[in-house]
Image 1 (cartoon, rainbow, N blue to C red):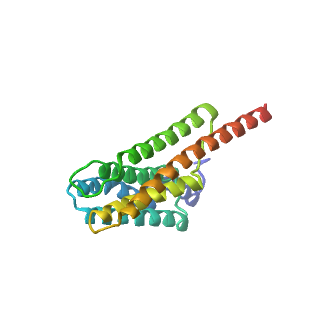
Image 2 (image 1 turned 180 degrees about the vertical axis):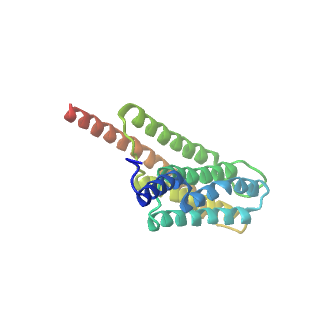
Image 3 (image 1 turned 90 degrees about the vertical axis):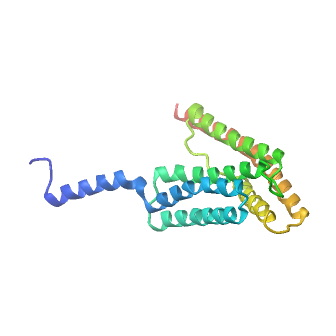
Length: 212
């Protein structure tokens, strides 16, 4: 038929369409979904006071986070859905661990309530700022800052140390340093996000005025 092209060309178009449809079903995305799937077992392990299992689940989560990012770059299989799923999976596991370790369930060491509240409020603030930037100013990209990454890293360290402290003796000074370092980074990164948001808004308005 006219307009349909030759057989090989038509097969190539079909193959491209199929690959485009299956793009979300990449190996890195499956690994990310696996990380999300093991998150409930982290809660159950903490609830059962099986802190060794909880620590291993957290380690597996960290390994899969590194692996899916490496595979996405190596196999050139980055996708829009992967860009959304990966940070959600990370934040889901970390938030669940934080909340579970804040609630006293007979464990020897818990994350202080004040730290958990500040950490959750910071995350809520970041989401709110990102939504406002997108809805009001049309800013579609709001990448994390170095301070934000440092805060997330410190949260992971804090969770690991608390889990470890429920297995073996950990010096009180180590726990105190983790808690207050996390708190300081929460405050600094929170203000940094607000400052960066104002810069994004200013840049978006200047771009609109320049295009007018």
